[in-house]
Image (cartoon, rainbow, N blue to C red; front, side):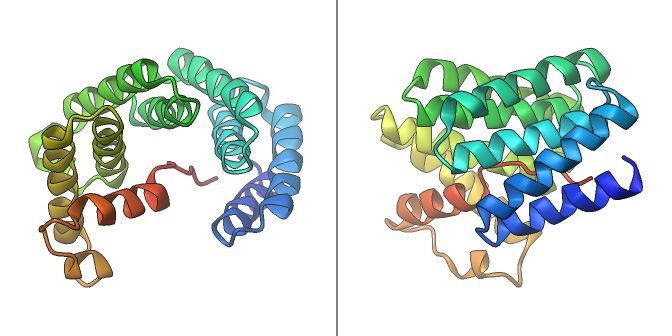
Length: 201
């Protein structure tokens, strides 16, 4: 990503993290226009901004626009990087989260399954537990299982993800959460905070 587009993209991510969604949208839109002109619509840097615009639209409740962005990003990444690349799988996860918000739970489960299986194949058993996007997908799966009345599976997935979060970030607040009855509530809160996989410029 070129210097100006890189700065705009990352400024958009900063604003999004601060909850300044209107400002974030302006930055991402400018970054996307510049990246499309300088690098082309199918360049991986362009697609990263497309992915983040999808997440921004999702957070704004613009679900139709979000789906367009995620679908474009996914198709482009599959062609440029391959279907099993971790960046591709990040967008697969995000599309799953969008489907869940739309109430399309069967489609969401397909996306989460693809993302988690893909992470497992790409990273292997040693790296998977420390890869935060994969843990985000576990949280999302837990939430989905909870919504579809599969409480035991939900608790199992939440607990797996929480245990690995505490291993990755032992000094953070995750380590202070116990694995008792509040696990589902705590995990859903963390899942909402971490479900979207933002991409840096």
